[in-house]
Image (tube, rainbow, N blue to C red; front, side):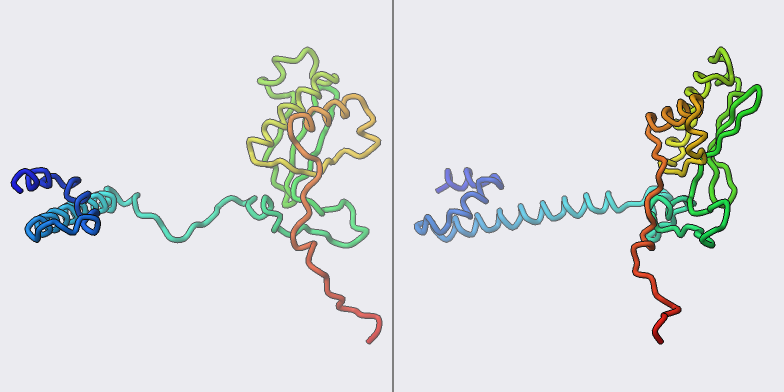
Length: 215
């Protein structure tokens, strides 16, 4: 009996014996009581360890540890990224059309080429020009086809870094027939820019007919 009591002194052995009580009904009541006491002490130790760990995790080190239950997204382009922002459609024959969020513009002078992306509210978040020394020092000419191709790559990289992936191209069909504009356009498309904006979600909602013909 003493040898059995020594073997049951460890918590793991006590739990193993407690699980096999139904399989061994010949154990004496003293052994059963000893097993139950060891099992209770083991559960109490585990509970105290768990509670201590939770207290350590809940202990606040500074005021920055407090997480606010409300989150405010300060990204001004958040609704546009989710296709929830409205587009200014205006009248049917209004010119120029404002039915976009971002639009690409290209301007060429006798010495330089400039390109920028303009928001519908007039703000210019991204722009690039061969007047910049960081671009001009790598070019043989600031107005040839190679310059426009590299300008398109630089502008596309800046657009992607700013989170602008979709836009409307301000170059019409006749302007894209030129070799320089075509090289600029292909460079931006090849760098990951899409010249087509997603359709707003509110456009999929059935429109109401406020002036029905049959009244």
